[in-house]
Image (cartoon, rainbow, N blue to C red):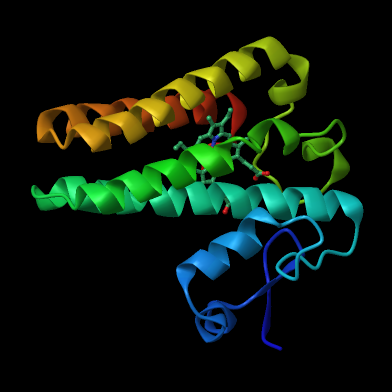
Length: 172
Ligand code: HEC
């Protein structure tokens, strides 16, 4: 089995194995069943938590990039955009479970999560709710197949990501 060590000190089954398994849908299934999945093989429970959330955010990032590319093309595949937007919504539902107490910078694990997530939970929750609203609107705007609406909603969704990253993620 091909393993690669991530910066959080955990390992992921490589992309090559995903391709060997087959369709992206299958990869998606594995991804959503992340808990105890073969993708995160960390050395501790807390590393497992950090590994799963970073993996989850990468999945969200990958899907927003797909939408970005489609919007930039000027002639988006609305079906593709809708699928990626739905995936962002679905994966995003786990965000509230990704930040248990004690999974912040204080535990000395490679994480970009800031301590403010836990010291200002109301603000974090508000940023999360904004992301939920904007990503759901991204799904509906893809369904309208209206380019201007989609483009505007893509930007609003990206702004909702930044709205949480600025206060709560280490700026790199
Ligand atoms: C409610 C807060 C919040 C929202 C909303 C949010 N993020 Fe994040 N994101 C974070 C935090 C915190 C981290 C750092 C996680 C860590 O390192 O443990 C992160 C990390 C990431 C990462 C890096 C993952 C890695 O490899 O370590 C990507 C990519 C990312 N987010 C993309 C997005 C995108 C795209 C959106 C919007 C569609 C989004 N995020 C919305 C809080 C948020």
